[in-house]
Image (cartoon, rainbow over all chains, first blue to last red; front, side):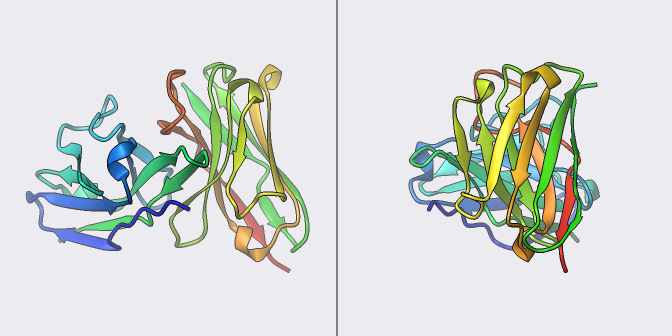
Length: 108
Length: 121
């Protein structure tokens, strides 16, 4: 089955830029979506279709893809951005949803 | 307010069954697909099942195929997850989630708050 690989953790200082990678074979051929989840809360969609932002999501959040890696970038990181972040795709070969293992963003 | 509300979670013994409900509030669920996603304690998100609008297409993860059944009752504005032969590995918070657009089913911009299912003797 399709696998999305994320680093377990990323740490950045406030005001800096956080980059969270998501690797997958032929990920360039499918839309990648990103979720933010804070402790005790449901996930929130922050980027969809690789680089689009839902209404209400700050412009500091952006998505991109290059080769076999998608990246969620958070500029001017704030303490409130500390959360787990998950990438997700739809594996159209078997009509399954696939999540990455998640990355814990720590704001130092 | 547009929201999804899960119910039916609880503590059950291994081998037991449980049915979760996901009720839509503030909108009509009929044109939208719905998914169940679970999260074991301290772990990541795991997709469980999908049902299309009208119920014509249904998919399951390998870990629940043959044990779980997803269904919907648009008259009751609800989606259900019947879970049979539960094991400790099914212990998790179960979220229902889906798109608020009828043009995609590939990502989820509406999530419920989740229902906790604990399987323990």
